[in-house]
Every structure is written in C-alpha cells, then in structure tokens.
Picture 1 (tube, helix red, strand yellow):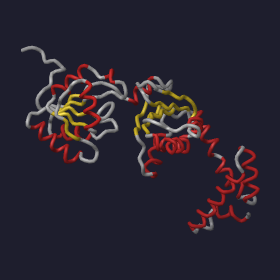
Picture 2 (tube, one colour; picture 1 turned 60 degrees about the vertical axis):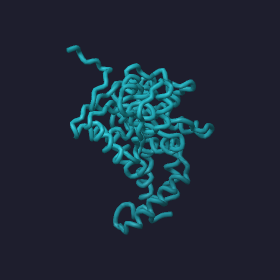
Picture 3 (tube, helix red, strand yellow; picture 1 turned 90 degrees about the vertical axis):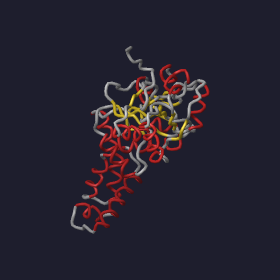
Picture 4 (cartoon, helix red, strand yellow; picture 1 turned 90 degrees about the horizontal axis):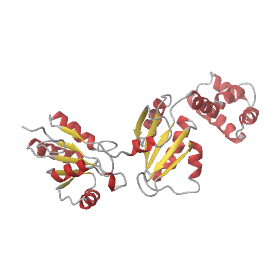
Length: 305
C-alpha cells in the first residue's frame, strides 16, 4: 500500500484550516485542497468564508460555527465526524483556535477520540512579531484583553514582570482605552502598533506606548490592530517607578506637613501637576475615612490642609 499523502482528506477527521489575514495569495495549496475535498466547512462567518471559497472556486457545504452557537453547532459537527464525515474548520482570518471558538471544537473532538489535523498558515500575531523589531526569541500571546476591569488588571499585573514580548489584539474602537490601560499597568514601554497586515496599506508604528497613544489624537483608528509591547526589564521597571513612585513619597511628605505643601514639593520634584498630586492625597483621605481606620499612618496624614 502506498504512503498516505498529507493532502488527502481522511474520513472522520477534523482539519484546522488557516485562511489569509488580508492577502489571498497567502492561501496555501494544501489548505485549498482540504476545503475542496472536505465534506463540511465549519465557518465563523459563512458569508465571509463564501467569498474566499468563491475566489478559489470551491463549492463546499458550509455550516455556521461561531461563539454564539458553538455549543449546539459543535455537538452536530462531532456527530458528523463520528459518522465518518470530514470537517474543515476555519476562522474569518488567520489560524483557527487562536482567539477563536475553534478551541472548543478541538476539545470536543479530542474527548471523542476524533483525529485532529492542523494546517500551518497565516497568523497576525507572528506576522507582526517578526517585523516588530522587539525580542522574538520569547513572547507571550495575550490576544484580546478581558472586558471586565478586575480581570484585565490582574492579567496585566501577572504579565508585568515577565521579560518576554507581549502580544495583544485590539479593535479600533477600543484601541485608545487599551493603550491607556497598558501604560497604567505596565509603564511607558517600547511598543509597536501593526495594522492592515499583508494588505496594501500595511503599517507598523514603532515608538513608546505614550507616543503611540498621543498619535491617536490626530488620527482615527481603522482596521484590526496587533499591539506588541516590550517585556519587563530593569529600565522599564525604573520608568514605571518614576511614573508612580511619587505617590508613596507624597503620602510620606503629608505625614509631616499640610497637604497643599506636600503637593507643592512633590509636584516640583517630579515635574507633575500640583493639582494632580493634591487630588491624589484628597482621594487617599476619602478612602482612608471610609475604612474608619483613624489610628494608622494615613489618618495622621490629614491633620493639615
């Protein structure tokens, strides 16, 4: 018997098929063959996938599989696989499973002892990383940050002292908010904004996080973004300390003098707005009062005005 060819579709097998992230020429011959031969094509957006299939003259049977129907549709796909049909799962762009509901389908297939075959192909995170100029030897892919602030803050705290390049995905309408969050939680680090990857207007902006944020004051974000941030190092740690270390010093000063004088001295020393420092001390006073802990140092802080 001849050796099995890797481009031959096997019955009862789940294929993970990457699709182009912008340039249709990046579609591999093997991916086209799997989509053409497979019994079912599970697509995140059937209309979007149909455009791709039409381009390559593929007339496959497309079924919907996305975040909102993954439980019901996933079970149906597993039953189809058990019956011997082959399934090719693809996302709207890039690798299936990465920031994609395909991970649930893979888990179900593994639990049912169904073969899972991944195909290599386009990926926005890695495409951006290799051209970013940041350290590509070690990196952590985060994807989209959690929408819940507490989870977002904890995740970034956990990643803040890891010396590897951090990779995020973000939509245009949340880009500004996310850059502000990264600056607040990680400090003002070297970073890269990549968009329109593999397309005609592919863009890389390499700067500090704060400068990238400032640029958004004069331009409107468009398209999907990859944000790459330099990993922790002693320099970034020092910069963050310089940016936030004044707070502890302000509290220390306010233990010895009126709040306004403490704000004046700290703002002068750290080149900050006196109003910003004074407001921070007032907020600390209010927070401390709410705790009803009048015996600690923070309570002593507010004897002066």
